[in-house]
Image (cartoon, rainbow, N blue to C red):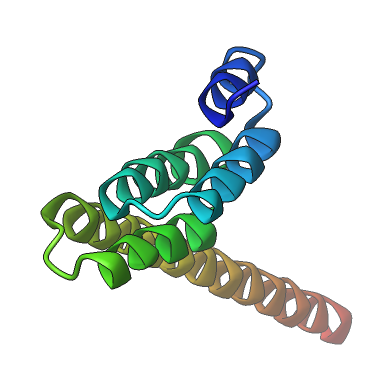
Length: 116
């Protein structure tokens, strides 16, 4: 079975971790830069959309840019994923701050109730 056949099988079975592992082995087994880039872009998409691992998607798109620093699609996608990740991190930080503020309010409210 070829790498491509294996990758197609894993995609059909929705075995995303196995798919990116097979794609990684495929990238390491070939020397053609254009083919490596094609596979890496597909890997990045799987990390981003199926596995939802933005860190690995970012690393994969950066790997494309190491092979071709002017690869427009990789640069644009990297920028978009980094923006999404930044918004997600800000959202978590705001939610954590909100939780802390709510807890502080409840503690203060209890102290006032106890004093009354």
